[in-house]
Amino acid sequence: MFNQYKGLRREMYVLFFGRIVTNMGALIWPMLTLILRNKLGLSASDVATVMLVMTAVQIPITLLGGKLADRFNKRNIIIFCDLVTVVCYLICGFIEVSFMFVILFFIAGLFASIEWPCYDALVADLSSSSDREKAYSLNYLGANIGLVLAPTIGGFLFENYLNLAFIFNAISTLSSTILIFLLIKDISKTKDDIVTSSYEEDASSKSVFHILKERKTMLLYLLYVAVSGLVYSQFNFLLPLNMEQLYGAKGAIYFGLITSVNAVVVIVGTPLLTSLFPKIRDVSKIIIGEVLIVTGLAMYIFIQGLIPFYFVSIIIFTLGEIASTLGKQPYMTRRIPSSHRGRIGSISYIGASLFQAIMQKGVGFLADHYTMQIVWTIISFMGLICIGVAICLKLVDKKAYPLFYQEEK
Image 1 (cartoon, rainbow, N blue to C red):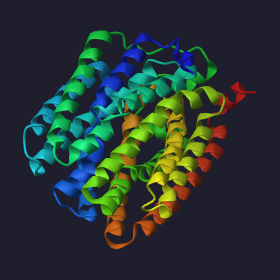
Image 2 (image 1 turned 30 degrees about the vertical axis):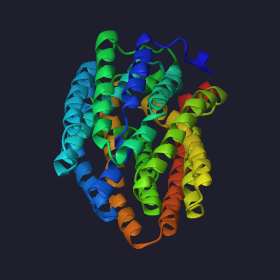
Image 3 (image 1 turned 30 degrees about the horizontal axis):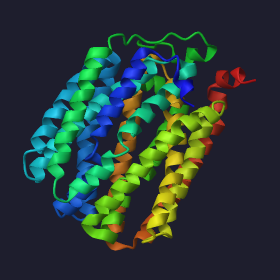
Image 4 (image 1 turned 180 degrees about the vertical axis):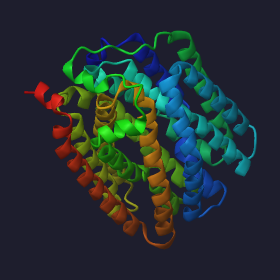
């Protein structure tokens, strides 16, 4: 299974190890909902309001990140953003949990928002169209290897030693930054000689809106990303609220264990699914992934308080997450010019985040006033809508991008 990752550029393996090191310290981001809810005493609706405000501020920042990714050295942007993040985490490690604490946490998140389009575009730049699934698969695998123990450790530190989690996060992020600074030098774009690479040809003279107007199928893809983002985000929003409602502060431990199982399944399942389904189109992987994600989340309508079934649910959910991840980024990067990866990637992220934050307010209201079974039922219905959009995307893709289908004949 792991031999399939041979032959990629050296820089891809550096990013892989960098992801591992960074996410070994990712003890705190999954805990944001619990910090606001349990440490600061906010209601579920207020937690959603805070996240909505954060998302509104992130919109121009993420657009800036996409523009910078298409104009300047992606490696240097990543290094600078990481250093700012490290400083914020270190300060959080030595102050009491308060709204100032959350503000510093959020500033770190803003610079991560600038960095994300750079990371995603850099993976595409460093890989050929034919190797795109393997490149994103390797990057995704590295992120989750680092996450295996982090959420569980974070869950145990949450109640009494939350500051230590921030210090550890700062150290791990700094280690990753040093690795990238020392070992990544060549970030020139990989040249392709296959026919479908014509969809990725540089179009620097055209605006991002002109590209989207030319390739209207991408608008349907952006709609899919927005709805799927809302459904997927319940893993880090509604699920921890559900655990907190059932188990109080101990809910952080259960949520940490569930998240660690998620990471273990990703480590085993990512290379396995990548090797088993190399000929399945990226858009088909998206549909398969969404069906499994919705199935895993819908189980919470029936399994409240049944702890063993939490882990059955997360296994199904995670297999869907893997399939969806292997489809999403390769799908987008193969169908847009390489000169616009950062900007369109940031628009995709912004659209999904804004839709998620607005709708999350409604989810928070429902969680405050109705049973969790009712809320999970509504989320499942949103998931069915998402699957419908993904199926529509598959139907129009063949007409919009015929070269991919000619190549498979």
